[in-house]
Image (tube, rainbow over the protein chains, first blue to last red):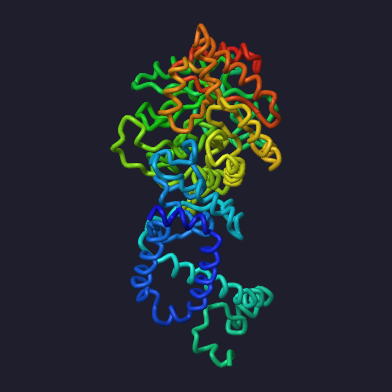
Length: 191
Length: 327
């Protein structure tokens, strides 16, 4: 809803605060999601995401949510679907070139970003949208990506070990393992 | 005569000189510290190459490169790729404009290789106007890329020798990359940062929209200098002669992204000869932007007044005439 969308950018700081916590929870839940199967929870989670974000941000479910980098103004509401800032056609007073009755999505984004803790994120160059992901849950995607990133950090020491002992890695690969360990295999070590 | 002929008159793959991305005449002029002039060509609604040469002739005398627009204002004309191919082979410096409105990433990356193979050395990456303002408002707007992702994509093709998919390009395109900026529309305080983003994405030169509001442009440039961007990118200020007060009003309300302050229109209205006054204003603005630190040239957009371009540029004193080569 347009009104709520304006509200969201005016209160971008609060939404940023809430989202940071939501994201942390999602990342923490990654092992649970993985055990149930991301495939199984994709539809119900996407449904909730669509409802909430649709109401608040007029979310179009691009599946690659970047609201935290766009001042809580959804760039997919831009008629040109610009992901990196306003075009050169913004009308006087900050209205859209294509829909003159609507505030420019990026004027709102700039406004919203200025209120946010991580305001500088709006300067990041974002890639083009992967159209295959339309309709899928960005929340679950973030959970997977961040969890994967954490795993990769944990794996870094194993990689360093393998690189420091290349001969052993070659002749006795189990002495410097690199492959993903199944959960049961390392359970003992965790205890 | 030789001066007008680019090194790559006939299409063949050449490496740019050391320290240059493309070695185009425009890049050489800018890197040599010359005040550059580019001019926008009015694309023909015709399949006759003669019409292209005729449109380019009045611009070539003073321009380091001629911009071939890509269906600007969402109106259908001869393609920028076709125009650039013709003009490049005839020895003109060209700027191949690419808008994201009409083609997706597959088409655009292919066209970039095609243009580079035809000898095109400068590209201007644009978002493009919405389809609604053009002659075919029922068309499907594509906007698969935006100008920033387009810049980064072409830079990746050039510098890393791969398509966006990671597939290798055996002979990467040698291109000088440009982008647009509009300092005179909201959000004003973000425009310089947005310019920084375009530089970050790969822009090496910038052509701005029309500058009629000098104080606004000066504020913009001051911030650009604060960010150190004037040392990273060549900025060409957009200028052009207004035909009359009526035309100015029409442009202001019908062409996206055009900001003309009321005093400019009032000055036109008060003049005996409005067209002459329009040219006079243009000359004054060119001289004024020439004096602003960080401005590397002007981009002349004289839609339907192309015959005036040489005279305006020469009278402004920003640049000497060059001898026109064949055609």
